[in-house]
Length: 185
DNA sequence: TAGGCCATCTGGTCCT
DNA sequence: AGGACCAGATGGCCTA
Image 1 (cartoon, chains in turn red, blue, green):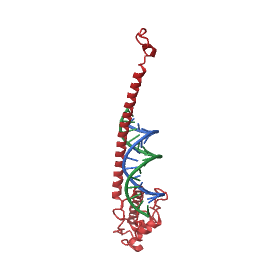
Image 2 (image 1 turned 45 degrees about the horizontal axis):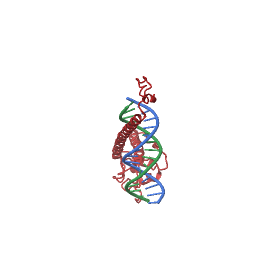
Image 3 (image 1 turned 45 degrees about the vertical axis):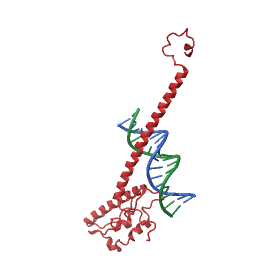
Image 4 (image 1 turned 90 degrees about the vertical axis):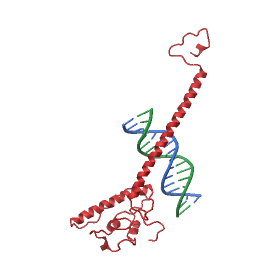
């Protein structure tokens, strides 16, 4: 079909579906198309990056809100993302235990030992359920010292840094990065 | 300087 | 088709 343009004499109307533009023109078109495709892809990528950035910002904002309702000591301690999630998991568990125990006490039932805390994640970096962190909690000077102090009659003896009953602190993971690494225990 | 944490980019996949 | 979601890669910042 390209020969169709070589010979002027035979230049009749091109066959309906086999006609192709001259090579040079087609190459230019292809280049133009390639460039258009490139800019299209690029603009889509830029848009996608923008959305992704925004999505992550929203996710971080939600994480910050979650940090805001979690008790930490010192108060301005910023938990990492993974710490925030794990602590939230355990904090919810501890609060549930508080309600459960309070309810039991209300019905005069002898409080059984609290249930084993859930395990939100068991990698080596998890500090939430370690005995050291729990003993650190109970050794807080602002906390009640004797076992009698851990009773559940109102008002509940609370830990200044956690706001949770002592028994829960001793039995369940509820500390967030406490004590600070450099703090004397 | 190594390791941890984080933000961002990127391509793939799934969903509407 | 376009957006949401996800996971891997990368580089910057900070701390021990």
